Image (tube, rainbow, N blue to C red; front, side):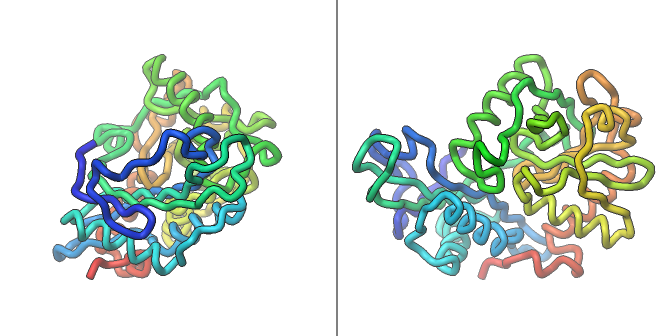
Amino acid sequence: MEKEKKIWLDGKFVPWEKAQVHVLTHTLHYGLGIFEGIRCYLCSGGRSAIFRLPEHVERLFGGAHAMEIEIPFSQEEIREVCCRVLKVNGMKEGYIRPLVFIGDGVMGVHPKDNPVRLTIAAWKWGAYLGDEGLKKGIRVKVSSYTRHHVNVMMTKTKTCGNYVNSILAKREVTRDGYDEALMLDTAGYVSEASGENIFLVKKGRIKTPPLTSILPGITRDSVLTIARDLGVEVVEERFTRDELYLADEAFFSGTAAEITPIREVDHRRVGLGRPGPLTKKIQSLFFKAVRGEADRYRNWLTFLK
């Protein structure tokens, strides 16, 4: 990671190296915290815009509410800081990471009255699954680790501790030479990847798992909107991994991964083993949208002043 100049921490900007916490910070030990991943793109005409900023901040606050954390700032304040952190660091593009966490005080599982803290950092981050992956597709393996059940964790929140599940799955499959892990739910249906939502295409129709037990991805929602605007039928329902093996096309969506095609799952070639026409069409329109080249989706952009 390339270090930037400053990070916002608890209401003020501090030098990158001084954005530190105590080793007894509660979230560090027990994982109760909420984060977001947000992207800012350099648009046509030279202006910069954050993609779907209000939706990301709303999800941050929703996740905190579900996890019984009271954020000591307003949504408006957090949106403003997300813009400022880019300007303070002189960044035209970047990845923004808000993190709500429980500070030090008492130890033990119950955080009691430990302070709720908030930091927002930004850094340069290219294609999460690689530029080559965006162009040619990636290799995916179904992990032996099952995705969280709705009565085990809050599956609709970006809770810090949830991602231990993702780390284990990602390590497992990359050790075997794959690019990304795909996880099934507790009933054995395809759920999501370590950090992405999944779509398949069969006979011109798109299918994606319903929101019952997966993270409501903001990029996922963008894909659904784009697909429907293109006149493509979209179905939100559970499907099995062998249905994925038999798909004509498949792709992941996510803020970090953007729209990444899948060319192989569990040694089975997906379709022709390369990004399919509908995947490429959606990917192309998505990148036009985030760069301000699609007027229809201009309301998704928050331009920096």
